[in-house]
Length: 58
Image 1: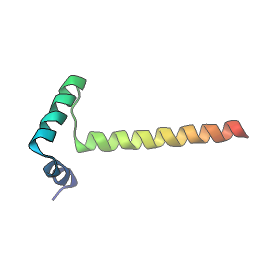
Image 2 (image 1 turned 180 degrees about the horizontal axis):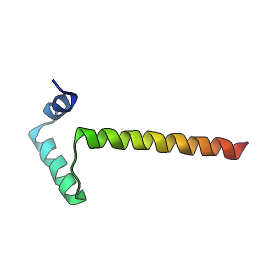
Image 3 (image 1 turned 180 degrees about the vertical axis):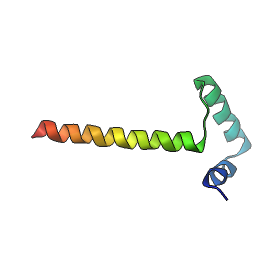
């Protein structure tokens, strides 16, 4: 079974509905791929800010 399906099945119907409402209000499509991409973006941003802070301390 695909990881996205496993995650989707772990949510209750109410949680799925809440996620759907949030996605509509944010006008974005929420999927495992989107979440995974955002996590990678955050990790790169965190790494770049840490690198900049170290460079500023030198």
